[in-house]
Every structure is written in C-alpha cells, then in structure tokens.
Amino acid sequence: MRTLLFLLVPAVLLLVPSSRALSLPRLSTSSRWIVDESTGARVKLSCVNWAAHLEPVVAEGLGKQPLDAISKIVVSMGFNCVRLTWPLYLATNDSLASVTVRQSLQSLGLGESVGAVKVNNPSLLDLPLIEAYKAVVANLGDNNIMVILDNHVSKPGWCCSNFDGNGFFGDKYFDPEEWIEGLTRMATLFNGSGNVVGMSLRNELRGPGQNLTLWYRYMQRGAEAVHSANPNVLVILSGLNFDNDLSFLAKNQVNLTFTGKLVFELHWYGFSDGQAWAEGSPNQVCGSVRASVMRRGGFLLDQGWPLLLSEFGVDQRGANANDNRYLGCAMGVAAELDLDWALWALQGSYYSRQGVPGLDEVYGVLAWDWCKPRNSGFLRRISTLQRPFRGPGLSDVEPYVLIFHPATGLCVQKKSLMEPLRLGSCDQPQAWSYSQQTLSPKDTVPMCLKAEGEGKPAKLGIICSDSRSKWDLISDSKMHVSAKPAGDGTGAALCLDVGPDGASVVTNACRCIGRDKSCDPASQWFKMVNSTRSVAGATSSRRGSSEREAGGGLISRIASFVFDQFTFVA
Ligand SMILES: *[C@@H]1O[C@H](CO)[C@@H](O)[C@H](O)[C@H]1NC(C)=O
Ligand SMILES: *[C@@H]1O[C@H](CO)[C@@H](O)[C@H](O)[C@H]1NC(C)=O
Ligand SMILES: *[C@@H]1O[C@H](CO)[C@@H](O)[C@H](O)[C@H]1NC(C)=O
Ligand SMILES: *[C@@H]1O[C@H](CO)[C@@H](O)[C@H](O)[C@H]1NC(C)=O
Ligand SMILES: *[C@@H]1O[C@H](CO)[C@@H](O)[C@H](O)[C@H]1NC(C)=O
Figure 1 (cartoon, rainbow, N blue to C red):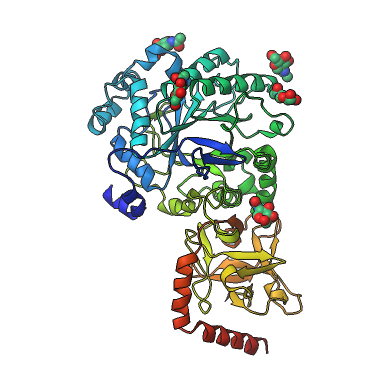
Figure 2: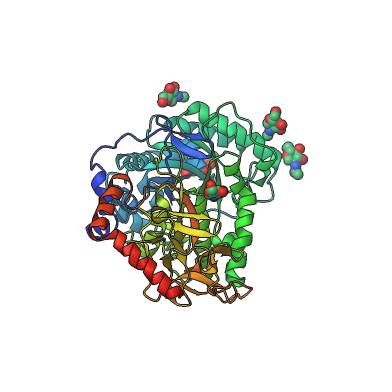
C-alpha cells in the first residue's frame, strides 16, 4: 500500500493530518456553484461512489482492506468526497439496522467475507449494520473526506432495472411515506456529522410508474423533510429515466421554502446511449450527445443551479470501444462546464452482486483485491478534473483559456519560446487567449500559434494574420482545432495532434471528421476551457522567471525568433 500511496499523490498525503479531521466546510450554493458557506469560495466536489446498498448492507471492501486504509486510498487518488450509497430499509427497518455485519454476511452464505472482515476490520464485524455505516462515514471524516449520503434503492440489492420494484414512487418496495420517513431519520442521524455535506434523495428514478406530478409532489416533500431535519446538507435531486432526464425543469422549477441548498444530479454513461459510440462516428455522436446532455440537464447551469454529474465512468480494463470514445467526449464536457462529479466507482469488487460472490467491478478504480488501482493511467487522466478550473474565490487570475487534451488529461504547455509546445500537467497551465481565430500565449502576446505543416511541431510565431495562424473549432464535436497550412488559405486543413513521442504538439491532417465509424479521433480532440487556475510563472514567480529568461537573453531570443520567421516566410 505504501508504494501505491507514494506513487500516486504523495503531496496530498502530507497535507492530510493522520489523526483528527480538519473541519470541513458547510456547503451552500451560489448560482451554479457549490461554495463554502462561510467564505463564499467554490468547493468542487470530486467524488467517487462507494456502494453500501447491496444485500449485505455493508460498505463494500471491508474484507479486503482496513477501513482507514480505504479512506486513505480515496485521498491518495485525489478525491475529496465519497457518494456513499444506502438502502432505504437500513433507515426504516429497525430489525435490519440491528443485524450485525457478521450475521448479515453469514445469512447470505458469505462465510469467506466474514473471515476477511475479521482479519481486516475486526472492530466492525459485530457492529449492527447502522453502526458500521456510521463508522464508515466517521472514518471518511477523520480523513477529511466529504460524504454525500445517496439513497440508492429501498430493498437492499443491485440497482437498477425498470421492473425491480424500487424504481418509482408507488412501486412494490417504494412507499413514498416510508421514503420520507427514512430520509428524515438519516438526515437526523447525521445532523451532527460535519463531513456529511449532502444527501442524494433517490438514485435513478425509473420504470413504468414514472409520473411528473408525483415527481414534483414527493421530491419537494422529501427535500423539505431533509432540510428541516438537517439544515447543513445540500439537498440533491435526481431526474427521470435513470437520472438521465431533468429537462422538465426548464418549464417548471421546484418550489421550496429554503434557498441556497438545492443541487440537481444527472447520470451519463457511454451505455446511456446504447452502443451509439461504438456504432457511429465519434465526432458526430459527441456532438449530438453533448447537445442532448445539455437539453436533459446541462441547461440548469445557465439557469443558475448547480448540477452534479453524480455517476459516470468506464470499463477500466480499457477495451470497451463504446466507453473509450464516450470518455474523451465526456471529459471534454466536464472540463468545459467545470462540473462537480462523482465517478462510478471506488469498489474493485463486491461481497456478492446479482448472486455472484466476489464479483469483479470493471468500472472500479480499484482492482479486484482493493490493493492497487485498476488503471493508473485513468486516474492520472481524470486528475485534471479533480481541481476546479474556475468559480468564486478561486484566484484573482484574469480569465483565460487553457487547451485541454482529454485523451491524456494534459494541457498544451509552452516551456520557452524556442522549444516546441508539449503536453504537460494542467496544474499550472499555460494561459492562452483565443479571439478572432488567433491563439496567443497570454504572457507573450503578440505571438501566436501557427501550423507549419503536416507532421511538424505547432509553433509560435509573430505573423498572425495568415491562414496558418487562424484556428477554427471544426467537426461536430467542436474539439478539432484546425488551421489551413497554405498561405493563400487553400489546401487541406491541419489539426492539432500529438506527435509520435506522445507529448509533442504537432499538426496533422484532420482525421475522422466525417461519417467514418471505425475512425478514432481521440488524439486530435482538444478542448478550450475557461480557467482562472493560477498559471505557470504567475505573479511573483512570473517576475522570477522573466528575470531568469532575461539573464539568458529573452530579447535576443525573440529577435532570433523573429529572424527565423522572416527567413522561413521568405
Ligand atoms: C426487516 O428486516 C428484517 C431483517 O432483515 C426482515 O426479516 C424483515 O422482513 C424486515 N421487515 C420488513 C417489513 O421488511
Ligand atoms: C400521475 O399521477 C397523478 C396523481 O396521482 C394522476 O392524477 C395522473 O393521472 C398520473 N398521470 C399519469 C400520466 O399517469
Ligand atoms: C441539526 O443541527 C443544527 C446545528 O448544526 C441544529 O441547529 C439543529 O437544531 C439540528 N436539527 C435537529 C432536527 O436536530
Ligand atoms: C412553483 O411556483 C410557480 C409560481 O407560483 C408555479 O408557476 C409553478 O407551477 C410551481 N411549481 C410546482 C412544481 O408546483
Ligand atoms: C468561456 O468564456 C467565453 C468568453 O467569456 C464565453 O463566451 C463562453 O460562454 C465561456 N464558456 C463557458 C463554457 O462558460
């Protein structure tokens, strides 16, 4: 485990106190942002889903690792929050709540898991289920991790199908009065827990019973019940059709007696659109699905409501073409909108799922054994999305554009004027301005990005009026960044791409623009993202670096660069 933690994000670990939690902020909302109520500064939720709603009603993985080790893994992977699921009956059926972890696993024939929990979490084994659940929440708090309590189902078990009796108000296992009672109890139980920052009222409403009148009636009542039992938490409402649809809110908002606590949640997977990604042209599918996501929920941001992408994820084994194509597009949208989100999922495996003991969760960030990441490349990739790009109180940097490359999770960086542009970390990105088709590094305006030719590095130059330096966002995905190479504006368009070394930024013929279904555009997908993140060499260090540069002859380097340009053009 130590190797894992050091390999991942050692700096984060050093900041986390080993014993007691720092106090976590009480959250509220300010237009579309989730903010720290006392400072008004943005708090970006970068959560991972952790299941505790299956038949055993025990947070998964307690047979694989000590609880505290799991919490520390969550931190080491860069998440600041867990969406912890729970079944309604845990809150409404006292005899279920008082079954012990041992009894629950035993009664399902999971004797091996009993032995495993005894080894890894002996102090939890004989706790009643509700106490074990509280222990998980408390330990996450000790590790400074925020928690969203997510009512995932009523009857413990895997979720979700249209006909499982847990889908909508009035279904066999979904009595609305019992649901409101359960929400009230959970909200009350965790009223004093500083790290419980939100409650997801009900996961993935679905099925033939769906009815908008009832959605408004019960969601409003549920929201009021939670808020009056626990005014600290964000109240998070999900939509219809497996939480793929909040479009009805465009016409009719909910009416609540309180303000500053309401958040909506939306789910978006590759399979939300069937096999569309694998069976279509990725650019076209990205364009149309993005538009549909905006219609189904994204519009809420513009109306001034926070939107949590509370489930998304991919098969982390990396061989699912539908998921892989979706991921590049989804990461572009998540960056562009700077969404709060919760990845599915933390768990690498289940005690038992759908009757299969030890089932492997291929969407899990942890491997089956919960000892290592399933795919460390994936974690590196999404780490860029774990920090906010913008929002209130983030920094006093003037808004700029960064150029994000979803396939790697990296950004287009300029090391110096002389060296080719490369992909690098987005932690201190290069700030660009993009206006009237010109892309300029903010610190060296009037230089601009230029296409020099097929397979050649994309370079900075000072002649910014020709077609080589006019960049357009072409293709349906709007993620191809393209310029025309020939001086007279004719000829085939070139697109930003990644060179054969995997890090240099070059221009190549634009690929996969049309209807070709077999073509994968990922390396040419770039996203311009509005940002106020502190930038490379900002303020005090900017002075430092330009002094260093001046020592190395900044002026003469620009001069020789200018000279190069003229010789090249001539
Ligand atoms: C409550 O939980 C107990 C223990 O799991 C179970 O036997 C009982 O059927 C449940 N009661 C209801 C009303 O679901
Ligand atoms: C939705 O529920 C309301 C209230 O029970 C009922 O009057 C209405 O007919 C239902 N609508 C549909 C389409 O089932
Ligand atoms: C919940 O906690 C708050 C303090 O954070 C307190 O004012 C309130 O009375 C509590 N509510 C209930 C229902 O216990
Ligand atoms: C909320 O209130 C507005 C204004 O009174 C009303 O038009 C709307 O229908 C209400 N929405 C619901 C869901 O009751
Ligand atoms: C990014 O900023 C530009 C210029 O201010 C604005 O037009 C655009 O809508 C912004 N994009 C997003 C996603 O907020």
